[in-house]
Length: 311
Image (cartoon, rainbow, N blue to C red; front, side, top):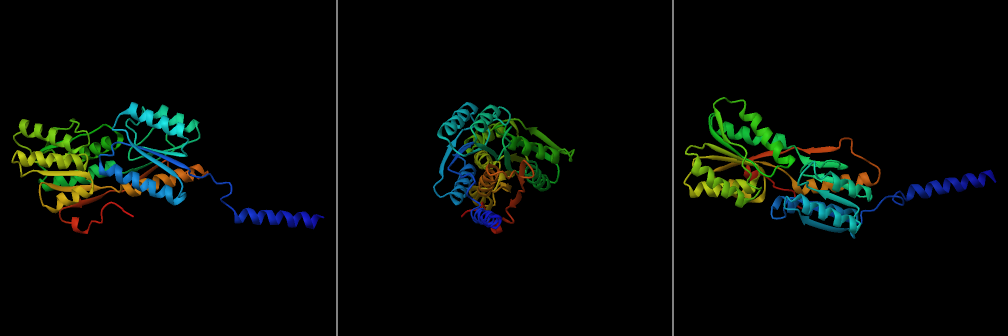
């Protein structure tokens, strides 16, 4: 009798070992709310997240929406995801602190919430670029190009954590050089090409001497470069952050955009979903925040740049 019970127990253990996924939680639905799907960066992030979700479960339902940096709109989107019964939400928080109530509502419904690109208060985990480092390497290159002296502008953007960190990193570089004068650092170009163009036009009217501009992302840099061309200010240096496909083309023209600190949004989306799925199944990451290292892409090395990860 004892032998029979032992044999039965061993058989059950063996069966459990052969079916480890029996008790695993499945990823049936993924909701993604990002800053703006008008920005290729967030399109790539959403694609990476969707691709990883489909690897985990080919039948997973994925919904990607654009918050357009509007917190109330993002609240509604998250509430819709909750009502839909998704398993996981990836959120690029429009406001890293004010997003907390929506995050808590989702978690109360049993949904894992992962912040991507920017921090999100209360999220189970966050995956983002080391944006302080991105600002540092982009602005160090800029400072070196102008010989550590001259009039510079920090073209700011929507005040999410990623942008704030980039600006802080940039300022820390400029602070090392007493002969660098920052003419402006607080104008919000809205993260867009149109915003960069409009703000850039204003710079070139107000400031007769500008040596360089750091734009917080590539769309702003491209818009600002267009404003510089129209103002016949072809002797300035522009650097930015993203490493987007559009900036690759601009760098190859050898124009005023000289460098961009590259990110990998596709991989960021993948890592976000992988991290969320691990958390769903009881495996939290060692660190709540995962920082991805940026790389500087310049006119000199752009031909060897692989670009944003694609599959």
